[in-house]
Image: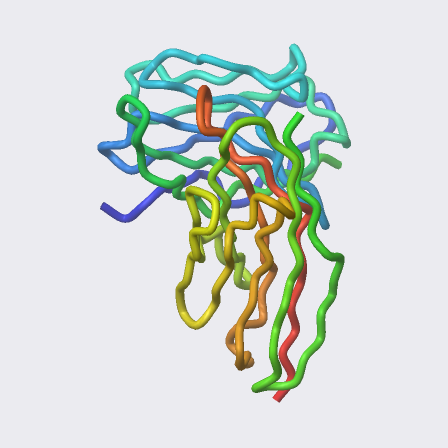
Length: 116
Length: 113
C-alpha cells in the first residue's frame, strides 16, 4: 500500500465552475476525513465517513460542497459554483477505528485548488 | 469547543540549538495529543503522539509530554538539524465520536547551518 493518495495534486479553475477531487485511502482503513487548509493555518475539519456512511459535516461545508464514499473505499469531494474563497489545500486522511481503539490518521499530499 | 494554540513562527535557529515549540489546548474529556510535521512539498506526517496524561511521545529526537494540569504538549528537541526545517502542527483528537483532529495554526521552523 502506498498510503493515502489524492488526485489531482493541483487544480486551477475559473470562478463558477464545478470541480471534483478524489481520495484513495489506505485500503484497510474504514474512516476517511476531509480537511481544508488555507495559507498559514492548520487544517480544518470538513466531513468524515465511517465506511460508506457520512457521519458528520462541519459548518464549513456549505451547500455547494458534497462528498461521497459510495463503496466505502475511495471518496470524492465536489465543489459546485466555485468561489475565490474556496482556494485552499484540500486534504484527505484515513484511519482504522474499531470500538474505542484505532490508528492515527494518515494524510494524503492534498489537492491545491486555485479559483481565478 | 476544542481548540489548540501554538506559538507563532517563524522560529529561526542555528544547527545544534535547542528547540521548544509551545502548544496548549482546550478540550473536554480525555483527548489524544499529536505533533504533525509538514516538510516542504510533502504531506502531513505524524511525528509523535501521547494518548493520556503524563505520557511522553518521542520520535527522531523530538519529545513532548502530555501535561493535563497545564493543558500543554510542548515539542522539544535537544539539537536541531537543517533537515528539521519544516512546519510543525500541534493537534488534538477527541476520545469519542468522530475523532477528527483539531489543529493549531502551525509553527514554521528554519534551521540555519
